[in-house]
Image 1 (spheres, rainbow, N blue to C red):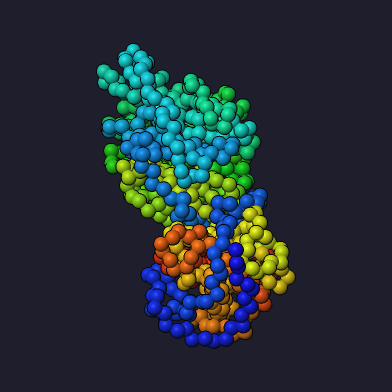
Image 2 (cartoon, helix red, strand yellow):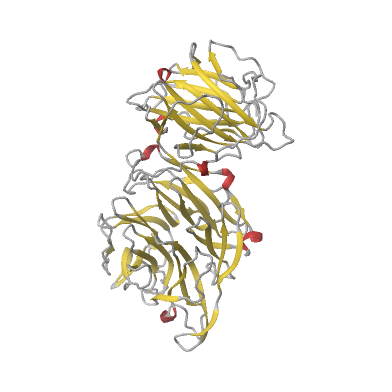
Length: 617
């Protein structure tokens, strides 16, 4: 493979000539007008085989607990566009797949459980499953649990059904799954609500990485319930939370049956024995005489580094007899990590945030670095929000996570320290799945780098940032630093490389909240350096006498759409003297411009207050 040599360019003010290729909507060429681009560079390296690092292979170092808890305002998550899939019946085996729940096995396989919509029953009564080694390609495994005939607790012929299967890999390498079960038919006017003895939670086990599961269920709880959620705490205790609908009987008051709350059973011996159930969260929704109507259902719980437990719940704000009005509520255990049993007439716990924003079916994830993420569905769309504080009491702006609408009941699963896999079903279009990447402050690795467009001397453990939610063209960025230089490595995947594709590095002072005269912008393409600019106070202007070194390598052909390319590497060395470094830090943003999709950036390029920091300079 022939790589471009080191390009050391002393820039002077240059006027850009007209180009016959207009920029696409959604992007802009630095220094260009509304319809012009810079001239195409001549020094494009010859194609060769490159090992372009994907974001999934990076950030492989050990996490430092709570390392970013004081910098959460600069953290964000972004969908990896290449991971996004719409899984139809040809994959899931069912027309409408509902309520996905998943876990990674000890050897890294994802097992995803779901059920299908059956007639008027959205929840369904049978559990199906599928597996994936890469969270992109899936293998249908068929039925996990089927219905079977029973004589119910009232002596009537009935069917035992199953829903809401939740798998969990335990610290000792074994796996368990907990499923809600009930007698599903209404016989002689008696529904599952009255057949409480036939309802409950049942468990299966696997001791071979999920390869096989026990054929028989063990019942660990008896009573009406929905939506179990499993969490193994750091001390090894297993918590099984569930929607407690034991009070869902006629008599709360006429026409109102959706009385709920969240209950908990605990195992201290890896799921062999379980405690009695206790209600740990309930919001008093309405009261009529001595009848109390509670809410808080579809629980999900995380454990913070402090040991405090945070729960998110679907809470109905509507009063008795009115249409539902679902919101997301949060409750907090305190730093001892133990839930007290709530009052049967007032609910609790006292430390809670009720009806924070509209939504259903919340799901929480805690990143080791300190950030917290919640997903939920609202108006048939799948959304996410990040907490704006480490304790998860306050939540930021809503982000539309997946593009398709008409969905409900989603879930998330942590993958390593910087990624989250998510899925949501409920539509004939198929189940939406995809992986989201955490971007936050990074620390430059201390080393001197030869700027030759070769990524073999960049370790996979180097911290990385990612942009790649708009199209198949996406980039990962890593940083290293010596005593006087900052080095940047851009790994760009792109199956249709254009000579006018480029990457951008922006730098601002570590305390910057807006662009100022100290801000710097550098752009480079496969042909080498394009521009170095500083912010004049109102516009970007070419910076003269700036020594910047660029090395590039390419795996594909530029401006030829007939073949499929792999991508390219761009390596940049920037003198620290050019950058607004203070106390070894700068704020930085990175963007990728692709001719087919426009500009995609780690954070908004005009909002330095949101840019992550590069530390260790």
